[in-house]
Image (cartoon, rainbow, N blue to C red; front, side):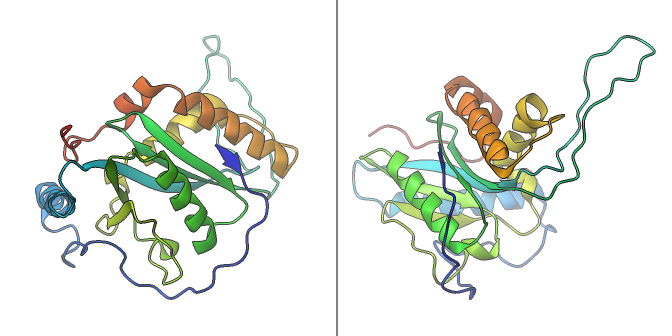
Length: 229
């Protein structure tokens, strides 16, 4: 995991679809089975488009802001007591760009001072560097503006696949943010932006080096891995 302290502003805030066609604009009316079938069909199309012997790695990507106004979580305490926890009112906050490939137990992340298209380009390059030489990555993500910008540069070994609108529960990276906060980041006071970035780096690295945890926390049945050639 790397920390990036300075980034240029995005070259454009105009949006366009990147990767395979997104799901029809039917909202959530089709139910979970319809959503899974649509995303699964898009995955199969990407697999079919690859050259013989090229595997498809399914990745999931998301961002989280970690700030001085940190979260509070439950803690152990004596019966009848009311444990206290520190709470800061500062405004400093970096962004953690995280991605995982559950089937391979792999992770790729960057800590950024801002969340925009330029930062997303850095993260796509980081993900690309983690994709196996004999594989093509499908990166599943939400429809944030910096995921659809015309200034987004997608590496040749990556295809972006959008989740339906208003469906964060389909992205297992959301579970990672909850896990990091509840285990290592909550109930803490950070004196500076650098302290927050150091804490985020420590938390992510402890998570990312546990390949079994990545598989168990982030696996999704509707996006299976490609069989080995």
